[in-house]
Length: 342
Image (cartoon, rainbow, N blue to C red; front, side):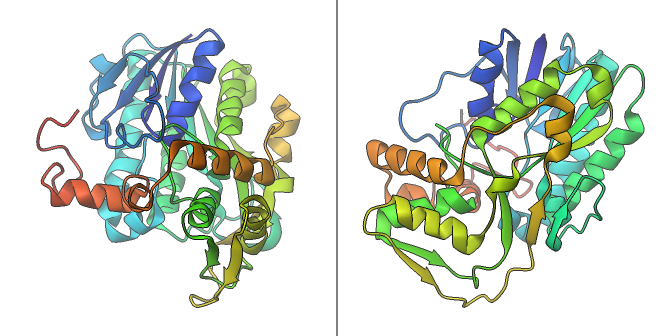
């Protein structure tokens, strides 16, 4: 298939594109380049790409593709809280506009990267795809709105599928260090402490970036009847862990690391465990990575590449990176480029 991947220069896209190419697909990327330079280690080889802001995509950009894999988003809860309207403009309105243009241009399949965070404060019960949605952040709210709007567009010519990813972890050449396991391993490597500011009790479902890529490939290959306007949770029940358990996995991996659960921020209201059986039953999806294996991978890659405290805090933390681009005049207040940057 000819496949368009939005956000191909992001954390997940950089891992997913080679998986799609290895399966024989003709991949083109679409990305504004906000995180293109956020690289740890050798620079990855990108597919041919369209350099455009998601909000400015045209019909012509989307002609000729059999499928669109839509990963691009402002995917950081602190950023969403700081700039909720921009989050909705990009994540919600930009995504729906993209889907409408893709449908008009003839793309039959639309694979949307949603999130398990739509379940919000689900507590101890395992959340299924039919569980109540309780978004606690503008990011999660934007994902729900896109799912609803894309479902209304579904027909015999257009099959959206909503892949609700668990919290991602694992190494990508375009690293994110502001997601829980990646963050805790970085703290352990750079400072020796695995510091948990909450009381450690909130639940988080985790899934490796490589497993997410595998899930999208399965959905891309699936019969239309299996993925037509369906939501699937992407992950595995064995990676439903409390924040304290995630932190202990890091302590067990990084030599000399010490666990500090300070409790200074209290109990995080975002707490949810997720049931992943639907995707497993429908398409045979199985994950390959445990959290412990992911922690070991991250420790190896961080030390081999010489991760620095400065890059950890700035280049690989979404909010700090975007703040720096805005402060030096590269981005305007709407998060659009104001000068040629890449």
